[in-house]
Structure formats: structure tokens, C-alpha cells
Image (cartoon, rainbow, N blue to C red; front, side, top):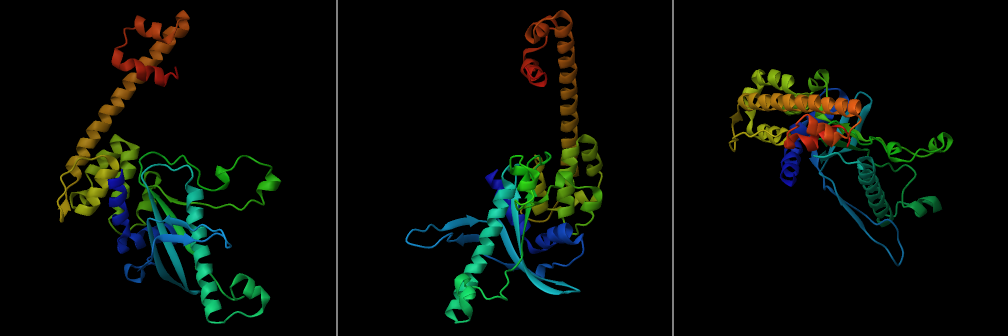
Length: 316
């Protein structure tokens, strides 16, 4: 999966797709961010959490970090946008993203303090204590987690969801951190229409793979998949397990590969249906005759290759 991590990171780092992703998530498809307005930022975060004779620098690496001036009717604000690509579900993702954001804010504060002290801009004990002037402000940071899997994200989506159940009166005073998550497998048709780059086809393909054979069949009839860019075809095929010959450049007809995946999905569904039917028969016989699951499988002459899966389905 390290190869896919690199492929997906490079794919989303493209300014047009990066802007499209955030325009979809934050601005409901409105083209507020543009490819031309994005600036690359160092994805390395380093802070020194405390000072004194003993200290330890903390270093973390984001996947992608870019800056942009967001212009709205109320004015303009400089914002930092980060993306974390996830191939698998990460059950500590809210905490991980909170750490990235906190380190970025701490780094901004340290740089401001250094500048203020160097230029002699501080006035009064309160400003000298923090190194920040009363009217200093930090840049907003928005971190978005992009989950490429076809399984539903069943992990926590906020810091509070990671915490043990506590007294509601206490929990009201525990600050929360909500994770910004995009999971293509969970996007509906209306959300996909908010995308205006080839992300729409790639995310649509992941969604179809998550839904199964019928969705893949419909996707295989979509003409937009007959001329998918080589880069998009590579990402989509890696995400959903397609075997496609992809050139270094140009376009790829994904429809034939999607048809093959549809057949595989149907075959898998039929096999799972057979296993469920066998398992139900085994359980019914075991309960009727008051015998064990293995003995019931012996009576029914269940093939050896099905037995382990039957036990799993029956929780035995």
C-alpha cells in the first residue's frame, strides 16, 4: 500500500484537484479556491513543546500542505489547507489531525514571537510573556482526511468519540476536535456533482465498487469512463483492485475493466449467498437435533473449503 500512498499523494497534490476537493467540501462546489491561488507549503511540522535545560523537538510530516487567500464578500483571509490520505481506517485519526493542526498553530506562534522580539515590537509584560502582541493573529488551518477505501469508515470522527463515556457535565467542558472526512464510498450523487475535475470519476468509481455489481455495471456504461486520464485510471484501478494496462500518458478506456469487475462482484455475491444458505441450514439442523455445528456439517456433507467460513458466519 506504500505505492498507493505515493500515487494518491501526488494525484491530490495537483493544484486543480486540490482546489476542487476543498471547493466541494467547504464551499459546496463554488470555485472559491483556484489552482493559480495555491502556494506550496513545507509539510514538515516542528515545535519545541517546552523550554529549559531539557527540551525535545517534536517533528511530524503532513501529506500535503498549501496556502491560499480565500476571497469572499466579507473580505479576504489567508488560510492553510492540508490533506491526509488514508488507505485504511485509522482509529486515532481525529487525535492525529488535531496534533498536526496544534503543531502548526504552535509553529506560527513561535515564528511571530521570534519576529516580535527581534524587531522590538513588544510592549508591556503580557506581550513580553507570550511573545505575541495583543493584535497578533494566527492563520486558520483546515485539515481534510481523504479516505480511499471501499469499506464504510467505522472509526471515530471527533475527539469526543475517542473518549471514554463520562459525566455529561464534565464532557461539556472537554474541548472537542471534529475531523473533516471525505470518504468517496459514502458520497451521494449530489455531492459527486460538486466536483469539477476528474476527481468526480475517480470518487464515483470508488463509490460504485463499494455499492456492488449493479452500480459497477451502470458505471461501465458511462461514456466519461471511456477516456479517463492515465493518472486518474491509475489511482482508480489501484483503489478498487482493477487490473488495467495504463500508458504513461494519454487516456484509458476503463469500461472493459469495469465490466470484468462487475462479473467478479456478481460471482462473489453468489458465493456469499450460497455460504449464507449453507450456514442457515447447518444452524437449523444443529438446533433441531441439539448437536454441534461440526456434527451438523458432517450430516449435511458440507465441503471442507466451506467449513471455516460457515463457522465464521455462525460465530463459532
